[in-house]
Image 1: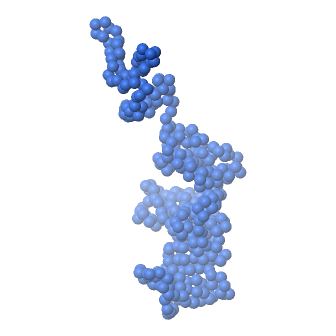
Image 2 (image 1 turned 120 degrees about the horizontal axis):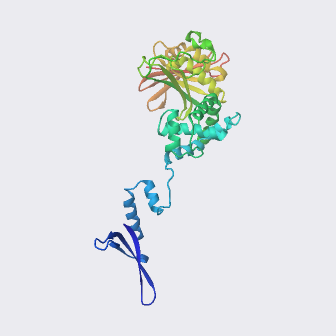
Length: 394
């Protein structure tokens, strides 16, 4: 079946063409093939081309993309490959807009690496995790057969492992570069940083037996002196599971976000790392980015005496949740002081009292729909530098 054009010459010499849908039919008597017209579309110069387009689209529904392309090319087009583009293209545009690719290329330039190749392989691995999660070996097949990525027609498993080694080695530098790019792009407000943790576990029975710590003393929780930050490493270990799966090894994931919920950075720690030790690593790492004059907001799991002292170094501030009972000295002193409340919102009233934990200081106590809370701001003996806040609620 095919579309043919027949022509007729008028008396005045003009030629008129007509489009017809026809197919060849063999004559049983003569054995010759003759054209049989199935439908007349009318004059070629007056044809409804939109109707023809709808007919083609209707027929193409029953063809593969390769068959449709070959049919449109009259058999002269050979389809060599067909890959998905949409999802990877969108991710690639976000990747560059947020400065992720630029940060990786800048860090890789200082090493003996093919800058463009390494950046493309890292992006391919990230895109695969986002669109069709799988292993690195599965990523090699996915990139080589299923998706179109600009600048990366394919990759080997060796390239994937080398790119991951580079990423882990240079993670701090890359994260800092991305942060500064995003902070400028989104005009982030970084005067308050919220920190919290969660955990994720693996369906395996044993934990990793050889934790790679740069300081062997920190492998023992009893060696934590409360003054230095623990070394970060992502090793599976047994610990208190927030998924209620204490029978499975896990890692602890920490995240710091702005007051608007924009992520600043993520960390991973061994599964038996306590929250009280994590906050010190978070402060040290963000301090290396020049983010020192911050108010740290965290729940009571971070509120040890050592952490409060650590967060106040360099004039830092903190806001910690505390239980109304069995709370720390500063919060207890704030809760014990009488005074008038001042309304700051429809469901929130506060009052300010002065306490003296190893020096003079200020505390604020409030009452809201969920009960009472207090904020203490201890100061240095001079009374000039605010060094921390502690929240307590019922």
